[in-house]
Amino acid sequence: MQVVLAANELPSINDVTYPELVEIISKLKDEHGNLLGVDMSNLFIANSGNDMPVIDLTRVSQELVYLSGDADLVILEGMGRGIETNFYAQFKCDSLKIGMVKHPEVAQFLGGRLYDCVFKYNEVIS
Image (cartoon, rainbow, N blue to C red; front, top):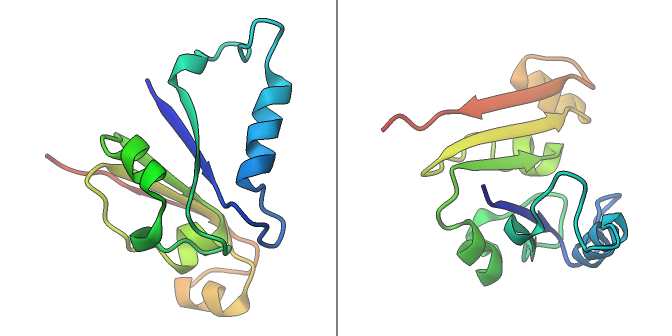
């Protein structure tokens, strides 16, 4: 299994940035360069190519496009990325959109309440 973690280059509200993610992963490694229970040869960290709480999937970095080209699952986390801008996005693979509703307008649009947690799973039927 290959895992690609993507983060923005620049800060956006309280999100972890790409440089911070690289540093966090580096600090979590043991003396042999491994994370507990994780095969580091299949863990990749990529710059998303975006710099906002939302993510424009037409403008992701070439690195992210390359690393995720044969993905089996895409997870978009956060209200901006998973709900506000890509709730209805369709992928060639299964996808999971996760976020907490933090704006009254979004809660009303979804027929929910403020601070509801939303999980939307889309399975690709082949």
